[in-house]
Each structure stands twice: as structure tokens, then as C-alpha cells.
Length: 91
Image (cartoon, rainbow, N blue to C red; front, side, top):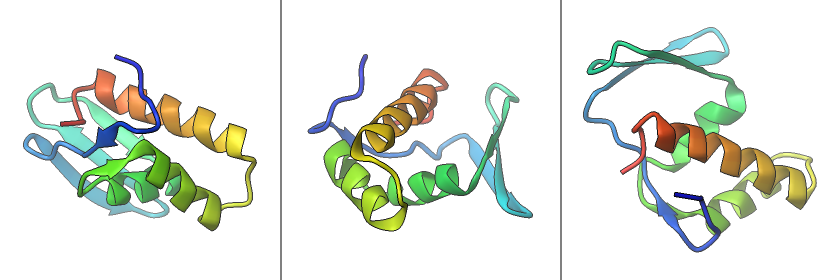
């Protein structure tokens, strides 16, 4: 499934343990045993998707926070969300 602007996204926390490690957020999927390390941007997105949010609102928030082009923001946000989705970390 491809991510789209009007789509609502929310993180799935049922099987995820997370801890801060320096500037990164390290998460473990307790079901699969996979570890995921998020940089600052990944952590910001993870925090914003605690509650349902549209991809459009998420990208607008990120554009207000970071000095990037809209195209770059959308491309990187879509890629990150699709990675989370592939790993079963989105509701």
C-alpha cells in the first residue's frame, strides 16, 4: 500500500519497546526481535504519529520545523512511513 497525503497514519505500539540512546531512538519489535534505530527526524515523526494524523498535516508540521523543500520533505516522509508500514509498525 502506498502512502498518500490524505491518509491517516498512527504508530502501532503493541509490540514495540523504545529507549533513547544519545541522539537516537532505539526500538525493538518484541514479536520479531528486530531492532530499529531512528535519527532525530525519525524520532520526531514517531512522536507525531502517536495519535492519528494525516500525512499532509505531518509533512506541513515537518516543513515548519526543518529547512527543506516540500518535495524533499514529502519524499523522505513517504519513504520513512512506508518503511514503518512494511515492518508492521503502523496501525
